[in-house]
Image 1: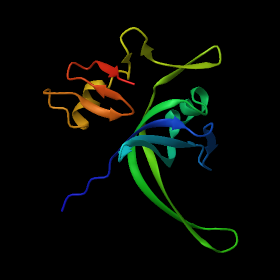
Image 2 (image 1 turned 45 degrees about the vertical axis):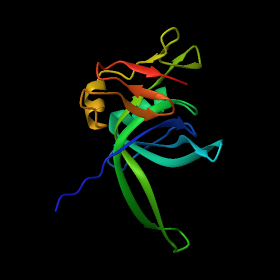
Image 3 (image 1 turned 30 degrees about the vertical axis):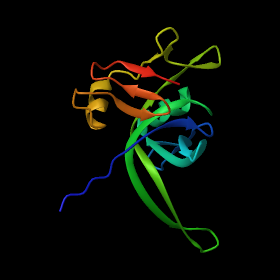
Length: 164
């Protein structure tokens, strides 16, 4: 029997990344991610937000702490992880989180201000060098666009557009 555990999320950080180090010196960053979706209920559009905890290891975690902040837009690729531990009071705790393999920064910092990587005239979004792999992973077969959510799609020619 085959198993598959892959998560792809795009959203905004709910807090600045927090960087810690293991006793062995390995960096680990954590942050919250808000993933929004719109849906129609009857004739009215509603908003729904899913809050997800993200964990990023090693150099990529250090980069997240250095370049991201609350509100930054990111695309996270990773896996679900169920963690359990015992609290100081002796209570058993558990948490479902995403351990990121890749975090793509979709917001750049310019003089302390965030702005999306968008071409304002064409509405295109630059997702970086891994576009074609992402397109294929999301089900793109060259015959049409792959919708990422929040009004953003990837075209078969690797270009992106934002129809918000």
